[in-house]
Length: 239
Image (tube, rainbow, N blue to C red; front, side):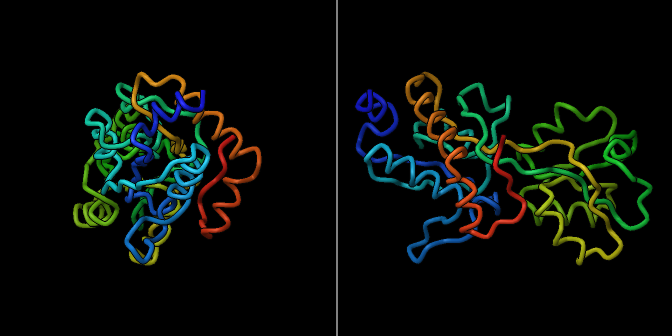
């Protein structure tokens, strides 16, 4: 069975792990040789060790690019938020960590709750094709989404456009409070991004192996240990 899983995940003896560099909670730095470091790379390394193969980290600037690469055989596993829009070509394990997503609103905003944001005439700045953007595209009924590439560009669109809200991961919004005095991060969450391990469709044994790994990594405390090791605030071990 192990040989069959290795054949599905690392047929050339190296596990290629797609890493979303935009997620600053899961990728918190780079090594001396430029490889990404953090919770996600360490999860990938542990999987390679379990398989007894070498590891190659394949970085992507944004999660959408990582998801798109599923059809081009550019990676063997992808550490990315599980979303229905990505499930056409990717099978996901259950989440190993989750991250709250909410809104930043400008000074003087009448919004007091998450429901106040989704109203006609309101505009929400959001990073294009992020997991929470995909959720908003499915669930926002009245407000308009304004897309930008990356966190900084999204904040600039929010400020320069005088928009009514900015959607992002809660930990990512907190630093912007100092840059916009009087702004507020709303309580609660409109979704929690489920960070999972993906594998291209048609590899059921590989998916079962990865699911078992995720279950054990959570129950043994390994995921919590990684969060502590990298001093990450805002990550929660998924249920």
